[in-house]
Picture 1 (cartoon, rainbow, N blue to C red):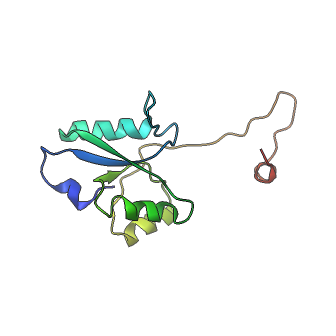
Picture 2: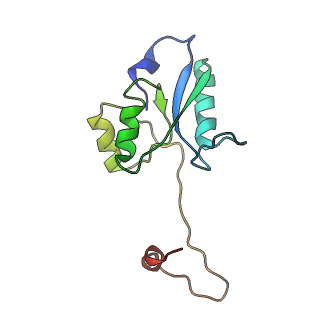
Picture 3: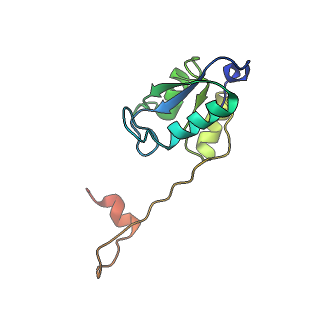
Amino acid sequence: MASAAAQDGAGRGLSACLIEDNPPFSRLAAEPAGIDVEAAQLIAQKLGRTLRIVWVQVPARGGFGKALKESIQSGKCDVFAGIPAGTEMAGELRQRQLAGTRPYLGVGYLLVSAPGSRPAGMADARRARR
């Protein structure tokens, strides 16, 4: 999603807020740096700007709303990559007067079991400790 700061002229850098240590999407001091880092690099390249990454933590209390307030809404970055898609997040963005793009990545999860055993259902997985 883009702030008003991202709309002004080229020739300056593009600052992108990315979630700190969120593999495989973003990783501090690691190669490859992650999917969101690569997406931000491509956007900056397409705009003819240099990329500056601003690492953001999503707090347990306040979640993405607090992360958005303390980063993109406070002017620390022009874009925030890696926001989850969904109606709840879309409402949060509207409330904060931020605009989001279509998702650039879809993620799914698969429950796997050992050969010959019956896979547990999601209800069992939610109750499991590990």
